[in-house]
Image 1 (tube, one colour):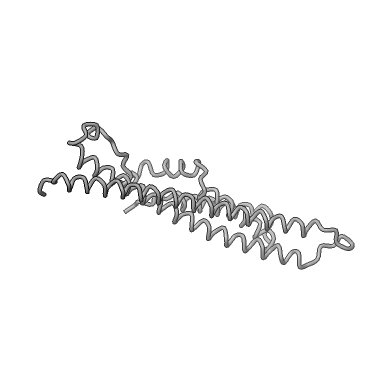
Image 2 (spheres, rainbow, N blue to C red):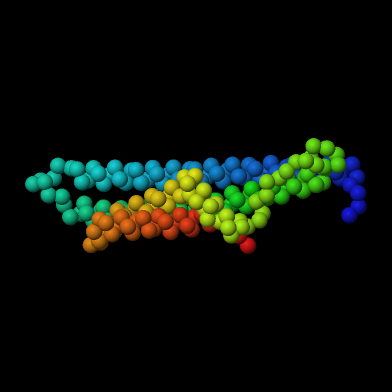
Length: 202
């Protein structure tokens, strides 16, 4: 490759910095979108639960809860569960996009350092934290556990989906409370495992 002219070097610098700015703005936008989606889910669930509580606590004649209240409860729990699973899937997609954007920013920083380290001495010692490598097998479990324990939106949605499955099974099937709880816990663990998987595996 031929040497850069001064004009080419300046153009390259501007392009790299502009690309970095665009990608970092995309990261912020993607994170904001995930937060809004999570908050919307919480708002919907809260509103539905409040409505169900109002139905069940009304002063019905002879204190007998009408059959339609149970039917509405079953449908509401099922609808919230489906919405929760869809939200979980969308949050996983958001996590993958964020990870991809971060890898791109690290790639740009590394190329910028390698291109201009002769111009700026400090760049020669600038270290870019790598995200391009897939996690080593030995550290995979630890990284998954750390992602879950951080309590981000994805593991939180997994937990909420487990709770919604428990409610759905308890209100819609003949399963006892204990089996419904164990089923919800199992779904939570499965979603934690799925949601904590690295997004950059080859």
